[in-house]
Image 1 (cartoon, rainbow, N blue to C red):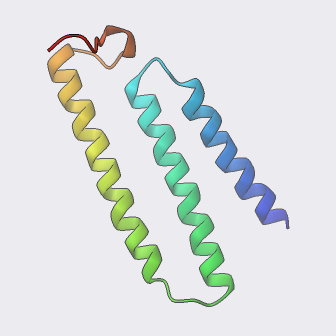
Image 2 (image 1 turned 45 degrees about the horizontal axis):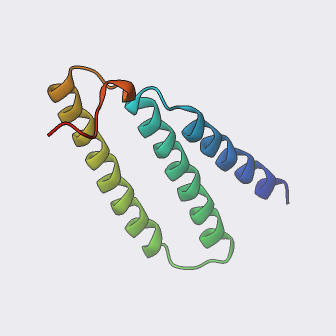
Length: 95
């Protein structure tokens, strides 16, 4: 029971960090990675406690690495295009 409270507290801390970081893209990506790591630990703990196979953990890790690399590539392209990672400097109307 205590572990469920701890995992839910960490998850909601990540959600709070994601919703409150609206200034920089890097802070948003870091909070998303924190949420993914918490979900990884929860899934690993759940699968180990019921002695299931850990193939789903490997699949989850593959998708989280792909998500992280995609986020970093978007960050690099935005910094090269605009010079910073502030959300206020981007305009949707520009082509």
